Amino acid sequence: AQSVSQHNHHVILSEAASLELGCNYSYGGTVNLFWYVQYPGQHLQLLLKYFSGDPLVKGIKGFEAEFIKSKFSFNLRKPSVQWSDTAEYFCAVNNQGGKLIFGQGTELSVKP
Amino acid sequence: NAGVTQTPKFRVLKTGQSMTLLCAQDMNHEYMYWYRQDPGMGLRLIHYSVGEGTTAKGEVPDGYNVSRLKKQNFLLGLESAAPSQTSVYFCASSSGGDLRSRGYFGPGTRLTVT
Image (tube, rainbow over all chains, first blue to last red; front, side, top):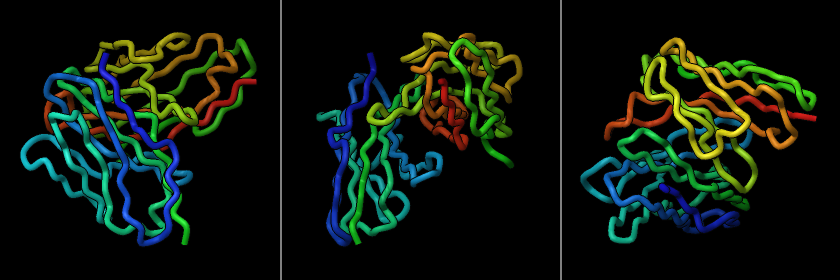
């Protein structure tokens, strides 16, 4: 069955530190890949998405993600985090069948 | 456009009671989804629909039923609520399962079953 795995459950960083959140998926066919962010008390918002083309995708607020097909990975990165990046981050996969499957989420806490 | 809306925002039920959560979208999307969000579990797909009149099971469908009588609405029903169904429920919609679709989420419904 299709699944998404996020390796880090809770990440704590200081401001200006670099961020990398891991995401791996298990599906052999064509997929769309997403990172969503959920700020405290809010609903999910799309951070960035990959459909095809350049495997390095840039999103909002300085985030980027790299799709590595051979590793079934779509890791999220940001060179320098801010306190306002404190949120929960979800990786998701959508195959052509239409099911949008999410990972377990990674809680990011940024200390000022 | 209102996007995706959910009714109600909060609800407290007693074990065995029933209720229906309503999701509405005004983007003419074909696909709609119901998820539940629990700490450490991420979002788990309960049921989804790929078009008006269709429904399909997701990862955790037991104890829930859904209906999609109108394209813009997707209802989630709990016939006999259990404490294990205490969760935050999110509805989402997308234009389809093609390579350009992405999910738009509602604000969530916080359900407590005592």
